[in-house]
Length: 142
Image 1 (cartoon, rainbow, N blue to C red):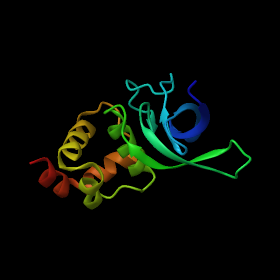
Image 2: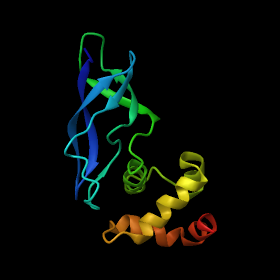
Image 3: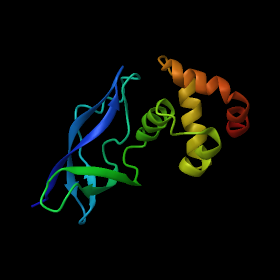
Image 4: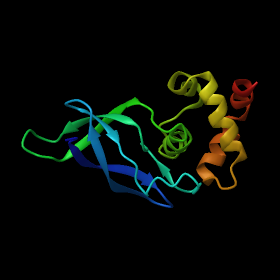
């Protein structure tokens, strides 16, 4: 039997909030985020820190508790998670253009930036980030 736990994922859908998501255990502290209806990839205004299929590292609040905190990403699941995660990080001022290639790699950074520029809806803060970093973005895309 696969052990599952519930962990709160931070999302932005106009405002920032957390939603519970089931996780399937891989090892002691590694879990895979299972599929959920909250991961609506068609909704450009919905952003999330972690998405379906991502393998994450968790920490228990204390030994007797099932309350868990996500410590970090081990491996990306659905490839569309990178676009959602990058915008989430831009809105939370966690992603700087000069760190993007180290974080995502050159090819993925190019893909993310091209997809960001092509979106129908984009948060004003993300649009501003694109404008501020336009010269660096053009160098990465070329």
